[in-house]
Length: 150
Image (cartoon, rainbow, N blue to C red; front, side, top):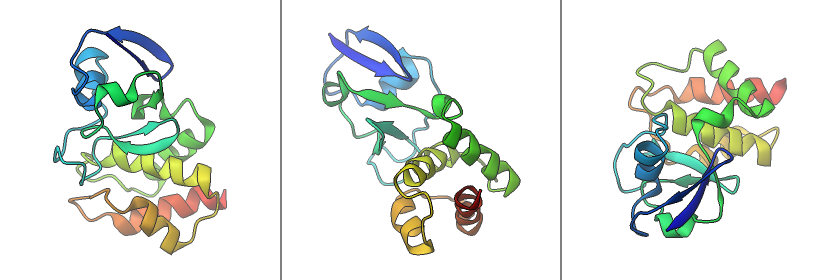
């Protein structure tokens, strides 16, 4: 049994400790905003916050997340900064296919919490590993700057 807290909701899970948190979030909590992309932690579609830090949930074993705080895209709008990021994403027309966007928004929110006015270089470093098949990187950067300038 593992106690997992996702978006403030605690649940005791009878699951294997090596089960990736991604599947616990999607299958056991029913939260499908966090996406499966590559399964090896390189694309960023599965990014969640683990105690406030961007983390690839496809590579995070359940046993390592037990007793810690997980935040998914479903709860980002509850945070005032997260809500600003989501608005900026819409205003900057970032989204094309949308598949990567939950991971992108989660990572951007964590960046802006850590660095309220990031430079282009800081954005590039923080967002590295969040792959966008549609290539909306300039709009992602513009949305982050929009929030930073607000």
